[in-house]
Length: 384
Image (tube, rainbow, N blue to C red):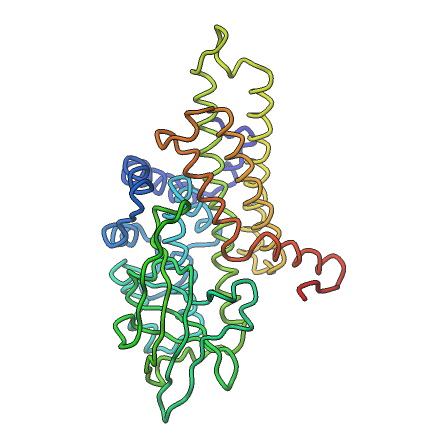
């Protein structure tokens, strides 16, 4: 399908190379099997992680420790092409790089960085990020997970929920209340008292590992604490990194749905002509392209701001809210064009549509991002 606005003409040669490399990987390695993974509720993370690491995609926007050190737009382009394959694939890369590696890279000790980052960049170790709890999602300031000092050690108790990679992770970056405020901890998942049962019976993000985390008197040395940050600034800065990837990623999901709808409309014949020749179908396709291109423009603009060091959290909220809503609308329209075939995994549309229902909620619900923008416009906080 043509890029009518020529948005990718604004990519430089290195960014185009990353685009083409990731697109080929997704085409060859993911698309032939992802429908089966989705149906079976599995994701071969251990098998794929070294391959993603070899491509330089894990922690790719970080520097040193075996990380690729790319610019923000390159990271965004990679997320776009990964999510054109499946949101679960992009989520794996995003959690690994932006939610698990980034806090160690940004706030960790030299020992923590040396121990974990090279292995994680290579896909030899998998990480997860523990913030959301069963009773505290949008309001993490009231989390109940608590770390208490016991001599020079910390003792961690509590639980987390909806944790991508949780049951396959080698290390968890866990945020907990302490007497000093919210702190982050680097928790090897082999530590006694740590458990991570997988969450099943999902109808969204099925090609992704989602787990709960439980901490039952998990004893950690003082060296497990992330020394560089205290308070919600720590986890929220990680979420800003990951949300940037979502802003780009959902453009890939929207594009995949649009391409599927266009191809189907050109070959599905009803009333003696392709349904793409009917005005109602062409109107749907035209608006789907407008939405995809507008989301792409938003992602590109925010990428330019990030590379210039000028990207603000409220701008990330704008992009996450606008682009995920647009992608979900496009997926639903594509499903309608495909008719009954749109609900089968023979086509990618229902898989993307179901996944986007989760993306709409995770890493900041649409309601929270709406209120962020409302506060930016009025100066009045409406969270409580």
